[in-house]
Image 1: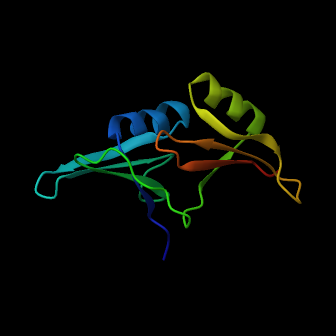
Image 2: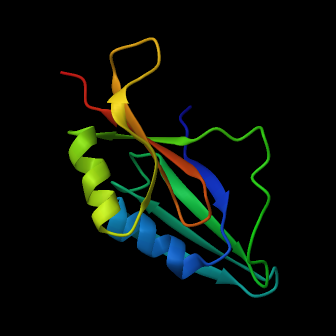
Length: 128
């Protein structure tokens, strides 16, 4: 068994695809409209779905926002340099929720950014 994807409901699919591709560097792997169900799915990731876990963005036609709730945590992305990654995200118009620095009660360098719908993305420094 393996994890295939994490699904997020988004209010503006094109805006979210731009964020995950232009800001976080993922690739759009596939996108499909489902007219009978009135929704569109887009799958993005750093590698193909056969060997990598990906993000599924679900756009329900006509729904432009969602309540985040208290149960959702975050998506984690490993980066070579958390400080450089936060600078790059900010330069591309992304929102930083927590600046780069050591995690609470630990030494791992992390930061948090938000996608256009407010979902937190944790940036974790690559371990040597």
